[in-house]
Amino acid sequence: MQDVHPLQQLLAHEGEPRTEHYVERPGPWGRLRLDIPDERALLATWNGLTPGQEEEARATFETARALFAPDAPEEGLRALSTVAARWPLWGAGHAALCDAFRHLGDHAEASYHARQLLALEPHVDHVLTLAVSLAREGRLEDARQLQSYAWTSRQAQPESSWYQAASDLLVTLTRLKDGAGMVALAEEALALLPGHPTLVYQRCLGLLLSDRRDEALAGCEQALAELAEGAPLRPRFEQLRAVLAG
Image (tube, rainbow, N blue to C red; front, side, top):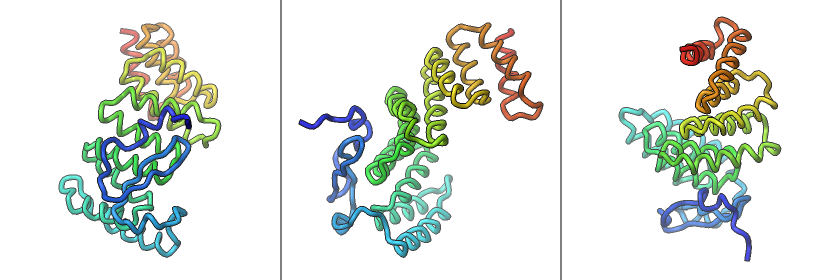
């Protein structure tokens, strides 16, 4: 029997297919279901769109995206859904719907489209996209599991991807009030990006949550000594220092 990847259950769609047609695509995390509204897509080569198709899809997508308005989203969502239905093998359509539903606060629907995107394009970046939606649904432990995977597989990723994994995971750990986990992760990331202000700040916050106030205060003082007056994070370090010194 083939081993089941530990992430497969989280990455796969929850519930029954939404469309009459679907396919289960093999990938690095096992078989992930892709719901397909048009049976003709089942005959596709899965190599993406031709240049002509992609140009048409992108032009239609830009028109649809221009219709999207957060205070009156119905027309824009219908247009974006039409793009995803017409070109079901084009990941950008599902990525746009994920962003739109996340913006509207419908994080369960955003997660659905993130899973569609993962079935089409099984990239670690899309694992992080799903993790953000799960976190905003309040499923922090599930988000942590996906973000931890992305961080621990960083050797195969560009810096932008593994930094995003570390950054997202630190936010989740903050919400979980896991100070020790924050400190450990921030120190691992700082070994790769020494002195990175955001990572230094997260380390100090983790020290505070771990009741290591003296170390947190020392970290803040050092960061403030090194940050320029107009540095974006300087006010946050000053605020944290005030809390620690109070």
